Image (cartoon, rainbow, N blue to C red):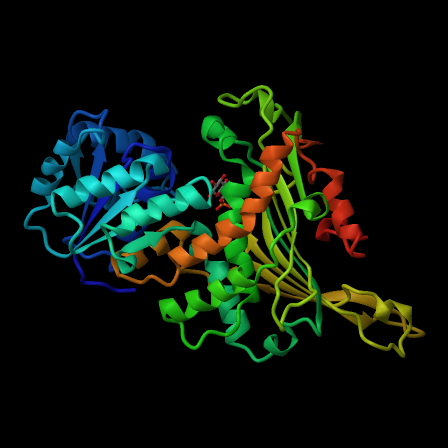
Amino acid sequence: MQTDSSFTFVLFGGTGDLSMRKILPALYEAHRAGGMLADSGKIVAVARHIADRAAYIDWVNEHVKPHVSKNGVDETAWASFLDRIEFVKIDLGNPEDFTLLRDALSGRPGIRVFYLATGPSLFVPICRALASVGLNENSRIVLEKPLGYDLKSSNAINDAVGEIFAEEQIYRIDHYLGKEPVQNLLALRFGNVLFEPLWRREWVESIQITIAEELGVEARGDFYDNTGALRDMVQNHLLQLLSIVAMEPPHSMDSDSVRDEKLRVLRALKPIDPRDIGKVAVRGQYHAGVIRGSAVPAYATEPGVKQDSNTETFVAVKVEIENWRWAGVPFFLRTGKRLADRVAEIVVNFRAVPHSALGASALRGGANRLVIRLQPNETIRLYCLAKQPGEGMNLASVHLDLAFDRFFREGQMEAYQRLLLDVINGRLALFVRRDEQEAAWRWVEPILNEWAAANKPPKPYAAGTWGPAAASAMLAQHGTCWLEEEN
Ligand code: BG6
């Protein structure tokens, strides 16, 4: 991914958690790799509480360096990375300060990227202030999720940002789309002839998509308590994964061909009837429990969380897609904090053979299954039945394993690194278009509204488990179970 296009990457929220853990480490990795960032490219951090560049560099050394390269920091690369960083002290609440930014950027070559690693309430004021000093030209803007709180607030932000930046300038980030295995899913589906003929209702019985975390809310209790798992994970990451799993083959990999197909899926999601929410959606909240041998506290006692909070830290939901390919196939989506394992995976359960001459075990659903593990280690596993050695015809489950790190030892890129390079190089395919985002909000909204109106507590689950039993019961109604419950 060589580039010679110069850029200035302006980082709002330059001392925030995201800048510290993800954005600056990703830029460092791109810099260290060499050839990915133009030599003249600069990073301009913007913050209010830091006096000057020297103080910002101290902050970066102290807070960012520990998050860089699991295999140790290359000190020479680190020093030259710091040379790319400049600093402008701005109070975002004071639009006049943006003249300082305009002056700092004047005469620089190449594209300007404005990365808003701030709360969504600042998106519109920042965009307006940028426009007031003419910085919306020759620029791209990156908006972090969550974009808004519901359809209405998301539309209000999109309308206001859309008055200042054209849609092709707006990069709505969903870091799951930057994960290597998610793109591999496109390669698997559309680069091979093997899977696509089977990838439909005639052969697929059900699909599960899980993003399970062991972490709790960490230092983000306040944010999370006003957000919840449905907004934090389902509206974006899980529905994006679902759209990639279910989309029709795009005409090409250009950004709008891919996004048009994803949009068709999101628009085909069967609307949820509020009366059915108890049957198709489960919400939970973790109580105290044990994760990998250590006791962890209840969600309601985490800093920043209200003691009587009804915010969900777990969601399982059944989704249907109303089109010819998927009619009648349930997609079960699930995510939660403080679960038994950290894993993100897609499980495609194929139907049983229509008739078996080989005995009952061949008639079992789930005998053929594709498990695409996105993290922690990227693998694809295809389960089949095979004859057990010896007398008679007894079938047993076996699997073919494809572990990507065995094939590709180098070149793996973190999601943020990949996405930031895409922004700098003007590639929109892995960013969420406004209409996709609207369709996703529209679909989750009845659940949000119903849960808010019900004013009932979510179902409790002990930290370190797989969530409330109701999530298992929901699948049992369809004669299936979550992958970890097999056997
Ligand atoms: C973020 C959510 O978008 O994704 C976090 O806001 C969550 O709550 C994170 O922890 C999970 O991402 P990953 O890449 O660690 O699976």
